[in-house]
Each structure stands twice: as C-alpha cells, then as structure tokens.
Length: 566
Image 1 (cartoon, helix red, strand yellow):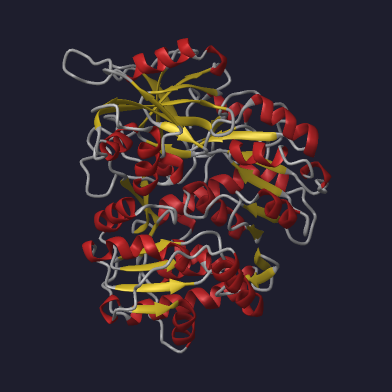
Image 2 (image 1 turned 90 degrees about the horizontal axis):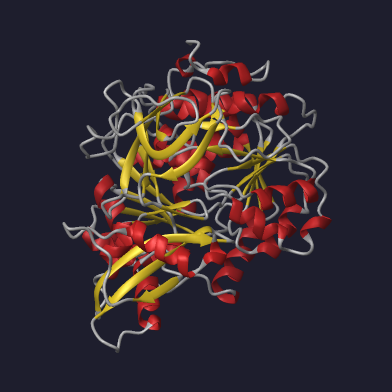
C-alpha cells in the first residue's frame, strides 16, 4: 500500500493493513469451517431457546437438500422474508449451500414493494413467516414465485414454540388473515422442509468466490429499489475486515462464549455482515425478533451477559429512555458499534455514562456489505467522524470534475476494496464507478491529515430514517397515485428519535384532501419507516426552469420556519 494513505499509521498494532479473502475457495467453505470448529458452541439464543452451531449446520443442510429436490437450476434466486427468529440463519445458509442466491426481504414491506423485489430479482421460491403472508398473498399472482415455504415464529423453538405461536396468533393477534391454501401456490410448511430435507441427498455444488451470493436491495433514486450483486468474495472480505478491526478488543475477552446482541434485523446488510463476523469467531447471537418492544428487549438483555452490541442510534436512544435500562449488568460489554445512521454526540455521551462502554461509529453501505470506514475500536472518546478505512479498503475524495481534492476539502467519497460489489443487478452501472474503478458513494466527505473522514452531506436526496435508506422519488411516485394530490415533494427533516423523518409537501386538488386520508394511503402503500410523519399543504412547489422540484429550497424553508430543529 502506498504512502498516500495516512490512515494506515492510525491502525492499532494487531490490526492487519490488508486481508485476504482468497484464502477461502468459497463462502460455503467459510461456513463449514465455522460449523466444524464450534460445533457444540451455542450459536443463537431466542426467547430462551438455544441452538448450537451443530444444530444450525444440520438444519441448513436439510433446507439445502429440500431446495435441491425442487429442481431449481443452479444460481436461481430464493427470497427470504423473516424477522430475527432461529430459522433465519439456517434458511439463508441453506439457500447458499444448495448453490442458489439469497435475496433478503424486509418483512414489513407492503405488497407493492414486495412485488418489485420479487419480480426484479426473478425469485422462484420464497421462505416467509406467516405474520407477513398477507402481503405475499396480495401480489403472488403477479410474480414468478412457484413455491412458498410458510413458517411460524416458533417453528424451531420446540415446546416453547407452541406457546410462542399460540400467543402470537391468539393473544397478540399478530398474524393477519391470509389465504394461500390453493394447491397452485405449492405451499410447504417449514417443519416439513426440515423433516423431508433430513432424509434427502445433498449434492455439494461447485462454488467459487466469484459467484453471486446475496442480492441485497437498496433504495433506488429513481423510485425503485436496486439489487446490489454481492459475490461470495465480497461477503467473505467484509467478514474478515470487521473481524480484524474488532481484534484489539475481542482478543482480550477471556469468556468461554462471546455474546453479540442481534437486535438489528438480519435482512439488513449491517446485521448480515455481523452474523458472518460472529460465526468466524464462534460468537453466540442473542436474537431479538422485535426490538421495538423495549420492555421485552430489556428483559432479554437481563438474562445473560452481552459483550458486543451493534445497533443504530435510534435503538440506543430508545433503550436509554427506559428507566430500568440503567439497572442492567454492563460489566461484560466491550464493544458498542454504532452504524446504519449517524450517531449523535448526546446519545454517545449518555451511553458511555450509563454502560461505561464507549460508542464506536463507522460508515458502510449495502454495496460494500456494510464495510467501509470505522473508528479505532479502542478509542474511548466520541469524535464525530466516521473513522478511517478498514483493511484493504481504499478511499479517494473527488470534485465534480472527477479530480482528487486536498485535505479538509469537501468532495464525493469513492471507495474500492474486495468487499465492494461489481455492480447492480440488471442495471447500467457505467455512471456508478470512476474511470479507475472506485464506486461513487454519493456521500460528501472531507479527510483530515490523519486519514479520518467526516461525513458532511449526501449528494443524493436520500433520507436516513433509523438506519434505513428512504428515497424521496419513490415516496413521491407512490403518493401521486392518491386521489386529490396534484403534486408533491418529499424531504428529510431532523428528528430527535430517528435521525431524520419524512416530510411531504402536497399541492391538493381541493379542500377535501385531509392529512388523515394521506396518512392512511401512505400506510397502505409504504413500509412504516417510509411514511411521511409531517404533512404540509402548499399552493405550489419551488421548481427549476426545467420543472425539477428544488428540494434544497424546501429544506431551507423548513429550517427557517422551524429553527428549533437545527
């Protein structure tokens, strides 16, 4: 590596400058190595039920054998739509072991969002928890799905699972009615998949690092989400980068088992990467299916020690706002990793005060398997930067002409590394990379003399709500279908709890259009975090001479009218 990378001098002694994903022939080899090394270790704990690495190995082989028996061509895409339940990891690993590509889906997606991802990815099989089957029922006729695997939340929890399923269905009524009984849908129950798969032969596919592993969808600036094609090499590299970065702290933990809190949803790229990092080191994942249930979350945390706690700022703040959170035992906590959205100085200071463990912030993206930059893991002081590039990552900062800018000068962050995808699925990628192969992130940063990067702005109009990308174009195109809306524009505004909230400006057709109608329409057509929390009626929108909405003008207008939100 050349001397123009000042960040290398900041690396702790036992963090390598580079990693080598090519030490593995495939991602499958990495998974199998973990299963063999840690066979008897607990791998997941969910609602008091533990599964070992051996249990997950066996379940994933059963899923793989069953999938192969369906006769899907190698390389086919299989969709996975589940929250953090014990069957998530065996299913995802089973899809990959069978020689297929996994596309994770946010279980809270509406029918419209689900339809787009299923059709764009070409998925033919979907594994779905029945809490979310209603959305699938709405769109299944308009997709290529040939087979459905239906799971219940408690399917891998033994006797406890029967209780969990009863409570979810009959007490909490969390399973909306659906009807997928028609034989043409080819529905199989998840326990049946495990039962049949156990007795079926499995053909180990010839896999390489160059093959697709994950088709991870990110918000699309044109209103439709885009599939980032993540190869097995991308995924292995990201796991190795994070593991190397954590080493100065993890190497000093002398406990028998290291527990990682997994409240981030596993379908999110940040959590997926952490699951791999954890597996390489034999960690136990404390699965939290519904982190919004704060009392339940705190109860879960009280039952066993936890050493590594990754989350988004919203989640950290939500816990700190619970009066009994401070009563937990934090003596084992060694790493608090903030990502997905900007961590605030106030939350970081409160967290350090309550837990005694500093919050370490980083930056990543779907297109780089959540890898990119991070602050040094042993730093105890919150510095407000997104840190320095992790091993084998190179970052340049360029101006609008594509020329590199100097220290402390603002420009677009462009990134290169073994974790960075080669492109989007079914898309022209020519404008997404620089001439010398760096991915253009769209984020505006500056770099100081030590190689630390500060995030200044986003080139795109993307809104970051609790760590999730929200794109104004998508919301605008959906909301324009609402009767009574002539025109609309969407911006992100500061929000104490979520980082940013969605605000929509609406030009109504007449006085009959109400905020209630708009909210209702949004809830029916958009996932909760994308729904506008603030609605303002206007007679016209500020536009350029070619008719483009000037969102910056709206942001300035909002700030001048609401100076307290600055």
